[in-house]
Image (cartoon, rainbow, N blue to C red; front, side):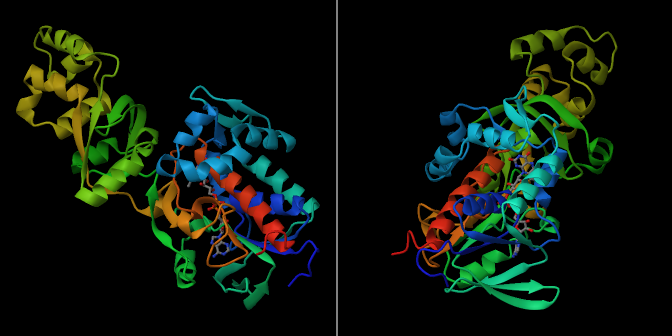
Length: 411
Ligand SMILES: Cc1cc2nc3c(=O)[nH]c(=O)nc-3n(C[C@H](O)[C@H](O)[C@H](O)COP(=O)(O)OP(=O)(O)OC[C@H]3O[C@@H](n4cnc5c(N)ncnc54)[C@H](O)[C@@H]3O)c2cc1C
């Protein structure tokens, strides 16, 4: 397609943070860059992330940061060593977006919004010569890097010297990432781990009374334990179960255990500030004719949704015996029966397996085709780790594609 020595033409498919970063890196290396996006505009999930304040990255020490990628830390580490949290903050600053470190160590733009950042980013990319093609839904790619798109004007075939696929995972499909690429890439011989929900809620199966009264209620502060880890934070009661940051942080292990064993039990410490001994003393105080609910509130500070959780989960007679009551307040067992559907998850696990790509994220079975972002088989908790790895991998894939298009790295 290109003659040796020219800059070459790169097609980026997918306009999320990974694709946009790939376009930026690729253009900086001199390639002609066309970005194709299924929806009518780019960055829809990025904008949704802005509703939660846009947690761009985290202020963890680098060694701690990389541990958040769990079983994939060895593979994600090289992405981050080229573009880490500090680099991301510097990049945002260059766009005129200052960031700050919140109390939890999470990093946000000072205005807590995604739209101004995205607007400036897309504007800068256009100024630098990236061409955007929206309403282009990719349905296939062949071994010659010819892409097939569905467009309003019908089917279109587009060839390129190099391609970056940045098609996202499978959550919130209404925003564009529908995970259907798994089928056509698998048909091309690419090894793909099934997409599964990550940072997701779980079903418990509440009684109708509890669900009606408490759906939407935040449970805080609480310690959630999965038997291995204990995390202090908060979660929210939903109509069917639970969701929220303290649950998301444990969600990969909980999901995998449910998959292997059909269910998983977690334990809730509803009184993180009081130890067993203190609770025992507090609750042993005379009730003076007060109801148990009132006694729990006055003596132990357990009220509202926390008290309701005890009544929901514990047998009545256990509520009236002080030892079992104290034990349940400190370690209330809750059985999670299934993960919520992938469509509702914050992110997805699974995707293109690392053994299908090389160190530049190029598909071994499709030379010249690179992958980036959530479509690769890694996962991380919320906290800015998702966007950081998406952008870092986008950069790497963009640089790789530009080098390939210039025939710098072809065999
Ligand atoms: C509610 C919510 C809040 C979040 N908050 C945060 C947060 O605060 N911090 C954080 O780090 N992460 C957050 N995330 C996760 C983060 O948004 C994603 O991990 C990130 O957007 C993934 O980037 P990506 O570029 O890989 O994929 P995406 O952002 O999903 O982008 C992929 C793009 O590819 C397009 N596409 C898909 N298939 C095709 C196709 N066949 N043809 C053409 N185009 C296609 C899609 O339309 C989409 O524009 C949040 C996610 C959700 C759902």
